[in-house]
Image (tube, rainbow, N blue to C red; front, top):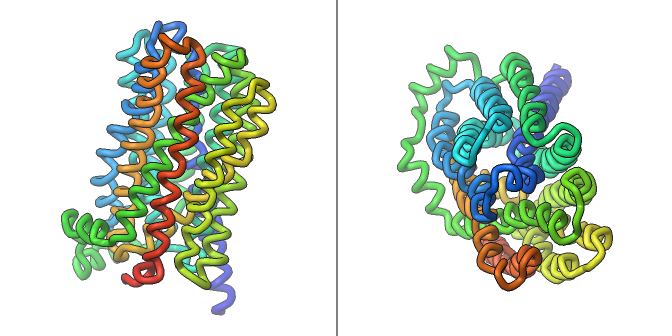
Length: 428
């Protein structure tokens, strides 16, 4: 009987992880497709590089991050049905993605992107909370890394599908085609995923017996961990570079190497996606394998990987042949992708049980506000500053600087790793 129950529980976990992975893939398709479509959008609407950075980054990230904290607090309530919350969020961001294709000017496009950000704010905090509740700590890095495969897979599909559609039917129809399926998927999520806490009646009783931790107390608990603060800095710096480089590398291959959106979407999508998938999976596996022996090794791979990626990325951006440049980008992209599973696993293990969604939301707040919000925008502003001197090559010089900045997250991941034996998994 116990064995049968264990198999049933294991099957439920696998179903939940696979469905959440698909949702996260849709999340990143809708989030990242704008990167491959940015150049044709710029040409039709007459946008500057700064406006591109604002549209692809800050407009989305500002609302995504601000709403993440109250949604996370709502997720941490014992009475909240997290799968239904995720379903509502999915339907919202998918519908707003479709509306992006109807924009007639910069302001309308900006508002639609804000809508995408509002919807996507309701995905990851409850998803991380679900996974943390269902998976034992020693397997948590691998489980969160599996969920995180949605990032490279979604980015890969967003670039490939967006690029091909841009060449075939234009950027407007591309937004509509990728947005509508997510609305249909939301019904599957709402009726297939189960809330593992308990029935709603039991949840209300548990809520009375164990009330939700007040927001201020939850945030203080999260930020009271020195290791978490270091992790926050490292993860935010990594996201700043990752989002900035992804947006502007796609534009770099179009402007400097003369590829079409479809060509960039396919070739860069394949290289970036394959490397991201491999790196994300390896990062979680290494953290679980070696972190079980010594907790500091949960973050060893991200620290070492970020440092190794620096010279490799520089030589990739320097290459004159686009195919050679893409091949050189594989390893630094893989190394830069090692951090996701270990980072969010460590975050879940550094805080009390009732603050897990808040921990994910705080980390997402800074990663997305600094990373997604400011990364593409800062790189775009810097490109505009350099354009008078370097012309169309301005993006190449921006990416040179981005490559060397990879030493910043490497340093902070290393500093955080030194505290993990003391702090990780010490709170109930």
